[in-house]
Length: 439
Image 1: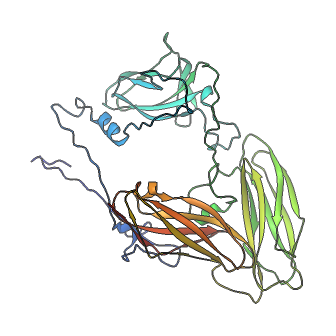
Image 2: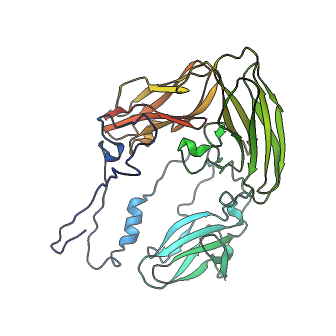
Image 3: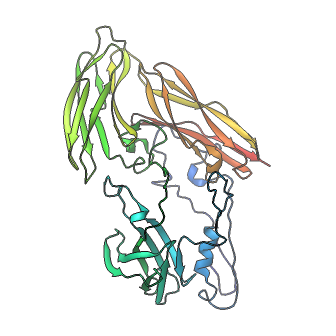
């Protein structure tokens, strides 16, 4: 805020200490190393601001464009000969919006959102791209959209990419779009066929830790797993007392809207136990589901304690899993996994690396697979990893995972670090420790 006297005031941070983001949900309650709530953010922060001054109003100074340039600086890296043996041109543009700095790009993506609508069709930019842009000066303008090759056709669209008014490319293959002041417009553009090129493998929408727990929301790890879980298996109830044969309900569902799917659900039972049936074939139409039952029988001498029944299916390069706890009376009660950090403080010099051991102990009779996240202060994420890793710890055993800190990727300062562990619908956090990066 700028006052009439020319003073500039900025609010750097605001923290919520109340419900919901300031409240710890999963017991035991965890805090920053000094005992404060994480929302108070009592650790090192770096703020970067740019002050632009000049004659005229904000339009003449082109402040919207300058703000975008400051917040999204151009990133460059050297190319190796193996990446591209052919020389690059001295000047090239993949997308140009004109008038420059009066029409700004908001999004550029392949046409279609197959994950959002549950489609099995791949997104291919060769079939078309979506250009979302807006006018920044509050004045009508004729915008020109130029691609790396000529456009063969185009259309205005809504945010769901449903085509509306057609747009005919000009003689130079450029799309011309009329915008009103501050209008946000979505344009569908189809490129002409370029020279045949191998697009490469792309980025697979796969979770780094397999299998993927189908009741992902219980792990508080995001809105959905990568790939959007088009096919899933669920077991209910979540726990059974196994004094003898017990039965669980199996549900297989498909979120695909334009393709059938078939496969087999496999069941993993403890050694000496049996499952009937041992596997469950399924064939589903778009949006279909099926229900079945599986009966698990323990041996007469089943060891007291918690065992596991796991149901798994595979689709699209990922494995999806749900599990039921099988409790034989007389065994251990309490947390099934216990985790802790192996150090009380981490100090790493700028440019050096440090390893933080994380111990995971399994108190049950059977193997438990899960995910371990490195959780740390904002600003440290480029240097703390892996962000997520999978693990499997045998029954009654202990496993050591490792979080690495790269001092060259974290600015000097004082931060915090902890680990989050999730398995079979359960979540636990270690205590937070001080992470200090020194010059």
